[in-house]
Amino acid sequence: MTDLAHIRADFPILRQEMNGYPLVYLDSAATSQKPTAVLDAITDFYETANANVHRGAYALSEIATDRYEEARTRVAGFINADRREVAFNRGTTSAINQVAYGWGLYNLKPGDRVLLTLMEHHANIVPWQLVSRHTGAELVYVPHTESYELDLEAYHSLLDERVKVVGITAMSNVLGTINPVRQLADAAHAAGALVVVDAAQAVPHMAVDVKQMDADFLAFSGHKMLGPTGIGVLYGKRELLEAMEPAEGGGEMISDVQLDSSTWAEVPHKFEAGTPPIAEAVGLGAAISYLEKIGMDAVRSHEVDITSYALERLGEIENLTIYGPADMTNRGGAVSFTLADIHPHDLSTILDQRGIAIRAGHHCARPLARSLNVPATARASFYIYNVRADVDALIDGLHEAREIFGVA
Ligand code: C6P
Image (cartoon, rainbow, N blue to C red; front, side, top):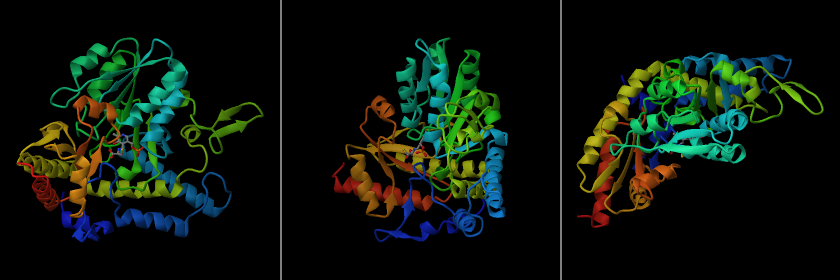
């Protein structure tokens, strides 16, 4: 990363104080902050191009449609997909629901299995549970090892002909673990299963190439990658999207509507029922341009640098347990921990009084929290605008928490 001070200056919110301290934002895994370029792109859209898309036969609507479709092209380029393989929606959660209800509901049956990992976010668990109620398919989970990696031996032994779909998080939002998606996908394909990749934590932080991964479906959210809330992406291999049913019906997604049946629009439009998040797509396009200017390799190398520093400094604190790989080769910038028996919510409150924002809780991954045997963890997560001084502030705050709670 070339010029960190310059990058920080692009994020107006980071100039703000919180509780009388400079804001130290360590919750980018929940949502990232937004640079001026993204905020300006959204304002500019509303000021100069706002109209509904794919509908009006007038110039302004065509301009809006062009901006919306340009954003799709940008997203497709970013993940090395064809633009017809990129459907916009509200976020990772809605993208995975599209696959569960559009593919799972029509293709799963009793005796079939959906193979998930214990690291999954609820977004890649609950939709499959809901669909299993209708289809009778069974959910099976791959555990993690003691070093917080996916148990590959267990994965291979669970991967039999009953498994029709494998759901994998590319990067755990709790452990930070980066899973070997290509290797997992090759094995899944050899067993005849499709692969759904939850890339909510991966696409913002590293170069993701859907062809290299050989993902059948891949989901991510704009708001975790400098873009606005309310916009997300479902990538799917074209032949799968063409064969898949839409999970939502309404305007925009049809070719024809008769009284008792309809035919669908071409992909990807059949997955975009109703007025889409137009300005949000434009904002996501601007976020991608911003990330591309930095370069995803530089984004990743900054993450490696700042997270290694955080792991090193957290390691200095006695009675602090980190839940996640110790080595940066297969981990990202989400660092979950507990400190002695201080409740993570108390830690978060004490840090908040110093202007430091971390997340505490189960991070929408309750099965994982249970397997870690903790009700909650504290989690610091990093992004391009974080600097070593942010880590130092976190460490000072944790020392204060130790004193307040009388931890030896
Ligand atoms: N994780 C976190 O603090 P949505 O809410 O649809 O944009 O993203 C859901 C989601 C799916 N998968 C993973 C791996 C995620 O991390 C998230 C969002 C946030 O960890 C909010 S719970």
